[in-house]
Image (cartoon, rainbow, N blue to C red; front, side, top):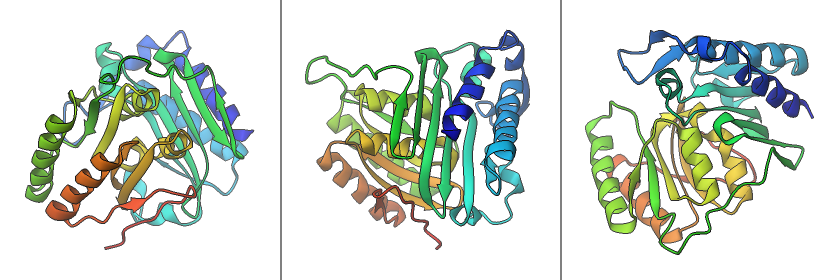
Length: 275
């Protein structure tokens, strides 16, 4: 399995003796202090590129570290692509905090061929390819009482227009009414994994970047989590939960405040909003 080999290469980088030396911040993006690039980001990007050049001939790479090279933001929806977030949670890593990971999604004409997810602090990797699901270890499901796991992870960018801000305000009210609180710890990868483990009851991605989430889509649906989403270029807005009522109410907010039509993720296929 090709993607299992990619997972092995990425795990090897995380285990390198020089790991701590690679956490030095190289630059800050768009004057946002929480959006940093470390040497580790660049190393993981390079390993992904090298793997693709060797084992996935004809495939193109869309990575957080080369996104500025894309000519057309919807170009990734046609042809064969490896969409990668080399280090989700770079700022956490740089500051010595937990919660970070690597994500890659392999697509052909917007159809999933597989995913790779690496979560070093959990000693976990997840590889999906050829209808096979491979985990480094069994996912530890939350077995606490009924109220446990009623927290909701909400990811959104620091800058939003007035329509998105209204949606955010309504979503926070919805979260307060339907959960034990909102969680944000600087890594969608870690948040989505905790959703998989049942420690969050829902995940809201509000205009986040495509590579911040999509590798988890087939993983979540294979575990009974429903996903509603809207993709435009490199931005994605989505809801993920097993709770139908919450999904319905949150979807109404996006439709009312931003006019977003959310698609149901099924058959491992992504649809792109070209408006």
